[in-house]
Length: 209
Image (tube, rainbow, N blue to C red; front, top):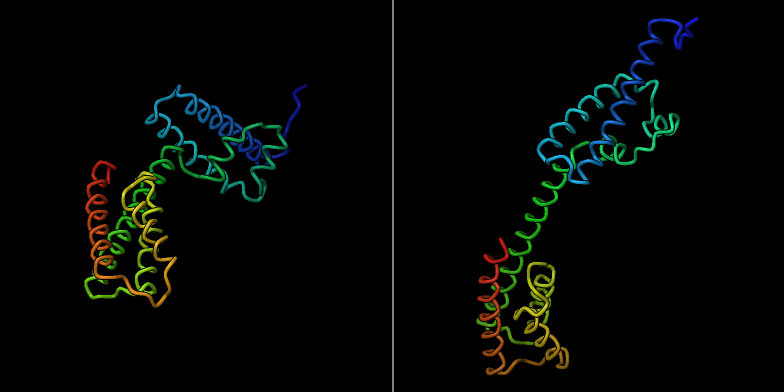
C-alpha cells in the first residue's frame, strides 16, 4: 500500500513546494561551486543564477507562512549548502553582479578622492600666493593634502607628493604656531607643491583613472 505524505490538496501542494525549494537550493549550491572552480563561464553562470534567484523569490513569497526561515528549512532537511544560502538569501544577486558593483563603487570612490587631492593641492598653493605663511595656516592645509594622498591606493608609498608633504609637516611641527615661513621657504614649498601636483596628474592616466 502506498503511503501518502499529504491528506489533502493543499498539503500536497505544500510538500511539492518544499521539494521545489530543496531542488533550487541544491542547484544553486552546485552552480556556485562550479563558478568558483571556473567550470562554468561567467555569462552562463549569471544567466542561470538569475533564473534560480527569480524562482527562489517567487517560491519563498508563497511559502512565507510555512517556511519563515530558509536557514531553518535547510537545517531541518540537513542541507549543507552555505554558498546557496548566501547567494539566495543574503546577497540576492549573482556573484558577477556583485563584482561589477564593487568595481564601480571602487572607481567612484577613487574619483572622489582624486578630486579631493586636486582641491587640496590648489588650496595649499593659492594660500601661499596670498601670503598665508604662518605655521598654523600652512600646517592644516598640508596635513589635509597628505591625508587625501594617502587615501588614494593607486599612488605608491614613495610617491613624490607623499614624501615631500611628510618632510614639510615634520619641519613645521618643530616650529611655533605663530612662526612664519621665510620668503625662501615659502618659495620652496610652492615649488614642491607644484612639482608634486604635476607628478600627481601625470600618474593618473597610467593608473587607469
